[in-house]
Length: 448
Image 1: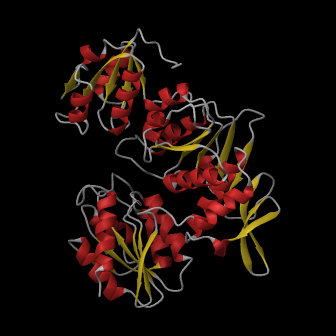
Image 2: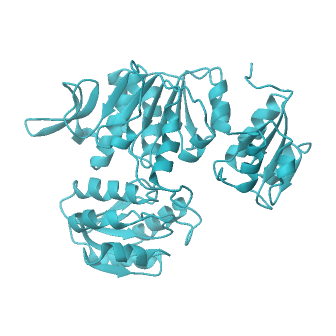
Image 3: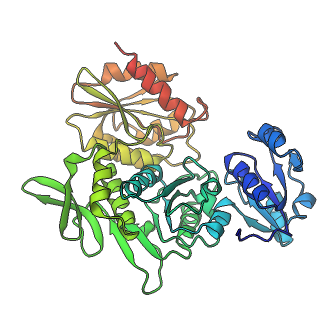
């Protein structure tokens, strides 16, 4: 039985992927609803008109009077809650909600909830694979892959959900079995007033959580908790009680829990210190929901990483090429630069640039100076990055991704790695980060 009053009127605001999942969910439960979108031709409009011709849909500027007919607005994560029409409706008593809040009200199985500025998708996928290896009927999605409401099923034994700050803004009480914020660094500063506002949005994930996992190396990930909430931690240092970390024995590094070595780091297929942290975070989350270590370690040994996330592309003339196109902010690029830089013999030749979303690039300077041979810059905000890097390393400016790949080949020495980790969104030059990564991989593979 759905936990939603069917005699009330709802409006779905935003007709993208999550909006369409809301339409399917509400229609299947006989709820009275309409749809609004600020765009004249939203992505799912044709599908809506074909499958639900009876649904009233309004495209273009949001009409406050129309919105105020609803008891509740389910707002797309892509639309800022600061939008004046939404604020006006809220001021008149209309509740602003979202698909994750509705999912949480209706999910019958425990939820593993994962957020963070970076590595959400890798850790979410990894926990899902660990659960599957343990024989659980697991559903994985949210901000990654399948929208949350499309995952709801009485068959599911465990939900593993990647959640963005935008989704969490409209989530009042998630009630996860275990929740984590993996890391916090500047992102989406074009939408938030500053890091504190972004941090607060992320921490909504902990509302109603029965257990939490935090990152010992990032104080901003640790929630303020009442007494008695079980707390697990991960980090690249030596672990202590309820901690996952790294231990060294006879010159060999191990993933470890408390005082017990679990497996040698060299058995991981995913490279770099940042991926060791991802593996430890996944182990902490899996352990919190009772997954056995043998199944989790088995999943870790076979996990090859996600496309566009520090993904190995090829080796050529002693140089490894990596596609980290998903690094759409400074924190993600830093994780790749420091993580991969510590894991190779030579230096990195970095490709960076694109739409910086209002970010400050100054934190790149020291890690670039320590780990990079050169930086190849492209895209709209390349000069902002150039100013931040100063004379840390040689800088090369290019007009296209193909030109960037050619320049990297000329600059790299045997033992080096070429890393596409832009620290920027892709929209100034590409359809999305996936297209940017695919074009980079193709250009690298085409090198003779």
